[in-house]
Amino acid sequence: MSNATGKPLLITSLFRMKCPSCRKGYVFQNKSVFPLSKTVALKEQCEVCGQKLMSEKNNGAGMNYALTVAIFFLNLCWYTPLYIYISKPNVHWYEDNSVEWYLLSSTIVVILLQPWLMRLSRMVYLYLYVNFGTSEKVTAKD
Image (cartoon, rainbow, N blue to C red; front, side, top):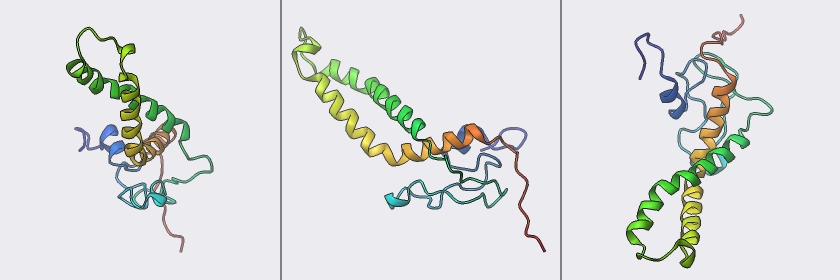
């Protein structure tokens, strides 16, 4: 997807794991998150524009923590209505084990989403530090 000027859209490129500079080249070595040992393995540089993708501090661990906490809060959006429909009237939240069920279900969701969250956190990190259209095509020297 692109806008009227032909530039790929930021959000679409971010979630499709495209290069932050040209938004066309793929960033990770594997398109799938499996095998898990190579989930966040980046290419050295973009094959389209030549943008360097690897750096010493390119891990995005803080961003992963923020996304994980956001998922815990987003789980309230589906858990709260479910709890209201299922719970008995006149029973308060502190009188049953709804908090434990919420924490258990949120933990399971976060564990299942963790490979994608790790990739997304690395992509957000790259998109914060690499501007669109900043790199030149790397050419081989004769």
